[in-house]
Length: 254
Length: 87
Image (tube, rainbow over all chains, first blue to last red; front, side, top):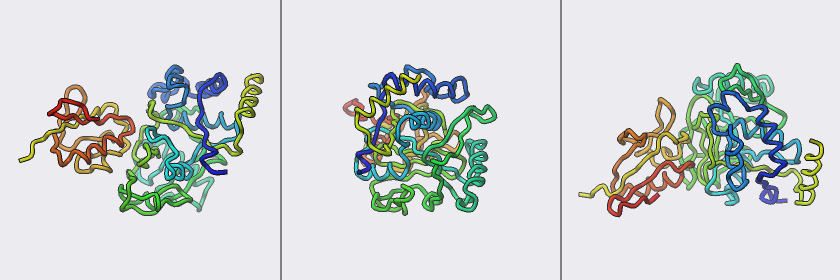
């Protein structure tokens, strides 16, 4: 099955509302809740019932809960780049795809230190923490008031962590012909009609911006708005009937 | 001598600091060392929170590209002759 056939955008209904409820139990009253614009359920609902807000915490907490119900996983950097190359993603929207951790002190230092320690523990010699590395895939979220936003990020079995050579250089243009299929990032910077925007310190959000930019600059982990979307990849494509039955079962079990 | 027909308006408060404009048009956009947001190079910082800069026609396209790429649509360009907002 082609990747495009597995692409799944979640829309709101009574059952996704229950997922939102579970997420808000984690998120409510944390500093992230107070800073971001996700705290009001109405904001989550208003965009034609399509999820069009996200930040790194909402995305991961929502995906964790949602993935427990449906056989799907959050789209990762690699999959997003493939779909971007095939013009299959919404050209007007953006998506959080993970985090980049630079090996230099900077914004979100508490998170940088904590996640680096987790990477050292779980990945040992497989990741060079003296180079920038990307954390994509599913990251767990739970309350922890010792951290700036009151939420801690935990690596899971579904978290992908890897170094990317091109993140050590400068921002610039690239061509989708030179995307590394293992990372979703360009192998080289130079010519092309796409752009890679890089920083050099702290923790930054990795974002696909519209259909032309991979940004590794934004250090505000909580701000978001209606210009963001969340996509899933279905592990095994389910038709609407199966999907609806599953939703019904969930509803009945709650 | 070419007149500065266009005006860039940057709603800086709502900038999300993604760096898109700075990578597309580095002569006109730079990322602030203080708060990480984009700044218009040599732009005014006005009381309404906007940054503004008049630009020549030859610089329109690159800034239009930057505005088109902005993920949250906080970069606008005005045509001072027609008084219309192009983006």
